[in-house]
Amino acid sequence: MHIFRPIVLQALTRVDEQFGATSISLAKKWSRDRLVFYVDHPYTFKDLTNEAYKEQLKKRKALWKNDVFYFQPFDDYPNFINICPPPVFPINFLPPGLIYNQLKTKNCKTIWNSIDTVLDRFHVKDNFVYINSFNPVYFSVHSKKKYIMSIYHCVDLIEGEKYIAKHGVVAEKKAAENADLVITTSDDLRYRLEPYAKQIETVYNGADYDFFQRDQYSESHLLKNIPKGKRITYVGNIGLRINYKLLEKIVSNDPELQLILVGPINQREFRGGKLLDYDNVHYLGPQKMEDVPDLIYYSDACIIPFLCNDLTQCIYPLKINEYLSVGKPVLTTPFTNLDDFKDVIHIYNDDASFVEELTKALKDSKEQVTQRKKIAKNNKWENRASQFHNIYLNKINRNAQ
Image 1 (cartoon, rainbow, N blue to C red):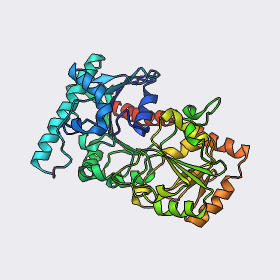
Image 2 (cartoon, rainbow, N blue to C red; image 1 turned 30 degrees about the horizontal axis):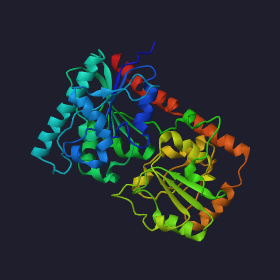
Image 3 (tube, rainbow, N blue to C red; image 1 turned 180 degrees about the vertical axis):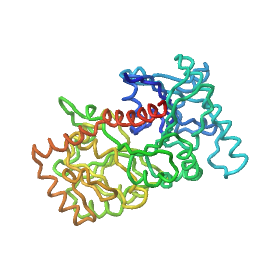
Image 4 (cartoon, one colour; image 1 turned 90 degrees about the horizontal axis):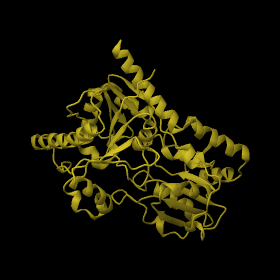
């Protein structure tokens, strides 16, 4: 008989980010049969004055005022408990050294004081599983309770994340060394952290397949004035990873092609100002996640226009399974090892090969749609969450022998 121990998952992605994340998707699935305490990356005292966080902070400030550090954000997942630590000191701007270390320790204690308070509220004493998902700076448990296992979960190349790389590169190696188990989302990430880990495994990203299924899809009003036939859609963060120069060539060569961009622009990393000047490029901005399946369905093809470099080589893209869940053809650069999808995707290297692959992609058939959806269904988050759970459960059982 399996013992479904509570999970404390400390993540870099906050629960109300505009787009989903691996950590949130896994936490939802695990919460079907156990308590999952999803700990937001803490806001700093500096963030309290930042207008960009105004809406997110409104609810949290009301909680903090009453010494409450959690809420339950999803009606469908009542065991998903979102812990919102109170504000901490800003430390990322500091150089490594005594002051940085002292303030980081204070921050860790603040975070864990709020976690322990919430665990007490839900009568969790000991034997929880601690997972740190891509937040290695705070991989340090300061709890009065005893956890049964610590896991570092690496979801991306930390060197490529400019803001957290400053302290994160060193912190991640230490987290890998100190964790009982390291789990990565790609083989390349595994190879990079293997020298530091006691035990390391890979669990790829998945898709919320059922979420993308609809009895009937509705065409968004945002698409009404965009011609059909060559609607090519990208959904995701619009930042450092995108090959903007190649996209410019593609849209300038074919005015009939309609490039639709859905997602937030990362102002620090965005290099596509010229791209947005084209009449056949349509930036829809960030949209609610529940509207994304409809936007994908009413596209003719979907695109992953990533640069091919060290940063993207480590990615197992979330969006590829999401596109395939709706049965859409996917055009992608060869930014990483995509062998698992070779039968259902179209790979392009330049503007000429893009045209060639797009021509193939638009000659759709029911059999191709079925095949794409079948692959996405096999990669459901339920399967990934079960695989992740079985890996650490086996290790716990071995340790107990």
